[in-house]
Image: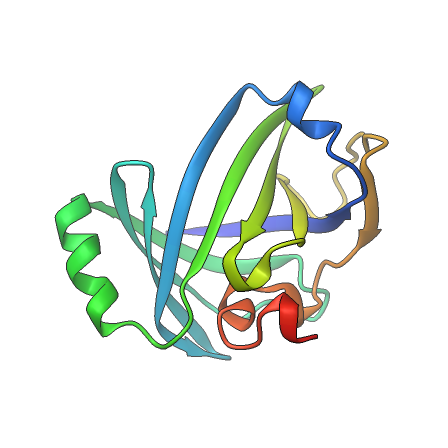
Length: 156
């Protein structure tokens, strides 16, 4: 169990791709996407994960998160129980000074949307903002993956 502190930004260019040290394929679905709790199943390349997230604080920066690695076959089986709307994306990892940005390039019904997240140790922690970051969307629930599965970017 842990508390996740993160900030989210839209991305204005593909410059991050040249800076990425890793790229992974992610497929995820939601077993429960209630506003008080989200239960997610995810396949990250060939690994499975089950994640539970609690509600965000008022600013949208902090929330409870519990994650457990499961087998890929268990994750595949759980996708049959998921709510409608599967998210597929490539995640790029970019190191900027002491932080790692996770940049998600969505496809399928969310194609065209690119979001960068940075995890912090405290809500007030300073961090460098690369020139490819755009508008901050921390706390804007329409950018939460659980909401993108129900109301994809192409329908906005």
